[in-house]
Amino acid sequence: MAATKAHHFPHLPDKGAKICGIKTPADYHHCRDEGAAFIGMVFFEKSPRHLTFDMARALAEVAVPQGPVRVSLTVNASDDMIKAIAAASHADMFQLHGAESPQRVAEVKALTNRPVMKAFRVKTPDDITAAKAYYDVADWLLFDADSGNPDMPGGTGHHFDWSLVSELNPPVPWMLAGGLEAENLAQAQAQTPAHYFDVSSAVEAQKGIKDHKLITNFINAIK
Image (cartoon, rainbow, N blue to C red; front, side, top):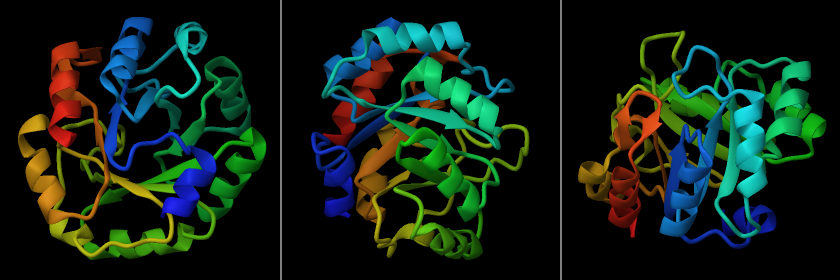
């Protein structure tokens, strides 16, 4: 895990938060100042956190070297859309949160010349097993709850049975997502070997609007 992590993002802390669904430069500045390891930018029109290209460009303009790793999240996006997102966001990494195959992960890596994180919606042990097909191609993995809503693959506040990943030790780094909040992070850290934790809805004042105090609390709970 350490070799892969260091190869792409040597400045990452040993454990940290991914604040997903940020929309404004003020969100970015707060995440950076508080020590978030990652920020997530959502490009999925059905999500309340969806970014326009103008919003993405505004975020790119304030990004700093050695700041949070900037991740562009897509769901079954076409080549043209991936290229447009890459041009607007200047992301450090892409997150594929749909039904993308291992071959598609490789295609997106080649298209963007960026590392790719593949997300999995977890309900049963079979969903963890399915991730093994991506070990050789994905740079990161993310295990999220299956919301039961095909139109909204993540960011719903649901969590899955963490015992399913209690022994997880893939050859690439990974993060835990789904229903995480400051109040249950200690439990998540005790029950899983995860080092990175993804949050979205639990750090919002309302859907799609981040609450900076809640972001601070979440990051501090990991530390």
